Image 1 (cartoon, rainbow, N blue to C red):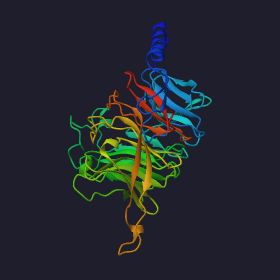
Image 2 (cartoon, rainbow, N blue to C red; image 1 turned 180 degrees about the horizontal axis):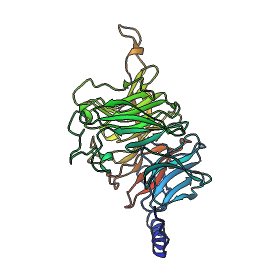
Image 3 (cartoon, helix red, strand yellow; image 1 turned 180 degrees about the vertical axis):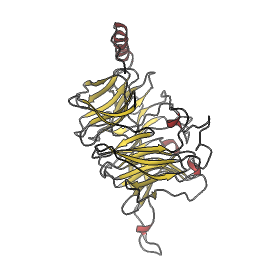
Image 4 (cartoon, rainbow, N blue to C red; image 1 turned 30 degrees about the vertical axis):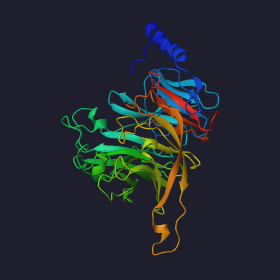
Length: 407
């Protein structure tokens, strides 16, 4: 990648920085909710990570994010910003063991996986990536990368991420049986590639458990009501499990993620689509299920959970989202309540789905956010703030909202 060193680009970067400082607030109380909001980024076009990708250092002190001019950290206590790598970066995630920021770099012979130390700024190539491997995540002990391999790759490079082939979008409007893909792991020390779970499905959203280096989560992408979407599997190819089988027409579930302790899978569930809303929780070891009910205007495109698992959050939904709520453009805080089971009778309560509901509070008014950019909220490691991205003032920036109410 060529580094621009002329005076003009430097002046342009400074101009963008000043524009963000003067025209967009940096610290205020949302008049509609009473919660404090702080803008963490300073450069227009800054973005936080996708909702299930780790973006925090292991000590919980810093957030790693991307900006047009480079890769940055922000100290969550002082809000001090520091650039750790110059130039646009395809960030994958922050390592849960070392805090290194893993990213892709394109060279003459293809792609390589690199990692920059978020504290020392030491930037090293980890491994060359064999052609065709699309890395999606790094496991919790940073020994494996994981993702998908397309057995019949699209003709154009950019089509890997959209699923297009011959100008079509296989999976959308179909039962998702028109791709030939596999999951893989790449050993970051030896370079050994292990491919498994060959499937006609379009595979996506590959994730590793935050606590178990050999537990993976992935989805069958496409039209949600036409497939069983959410699956778990071990890195040796065993333990393939359908997390939420369909049992009614137009049932959907998706945007799945691990709980912080790695023991559960949490996901959006609608029975049927756009009418009855839940957040589902599946415990991997016990197979016990808990469903939390919420109203349509409390639904979010992406949900998340606090580190102590006592609270949930959501990024709301725009007029063109899956459920298209009437007034759902908010950052939400959810307090879960479980309804005590009924004892006695013919059924064993332990084998039934536990039911519950969310007590919902609005934190940020996102009426001016264009939901072509989904906010993708995450709790900070101390659980006191929720980080999200938004274009509510025009340019994209990273913000955090305080969980506790200011007034």
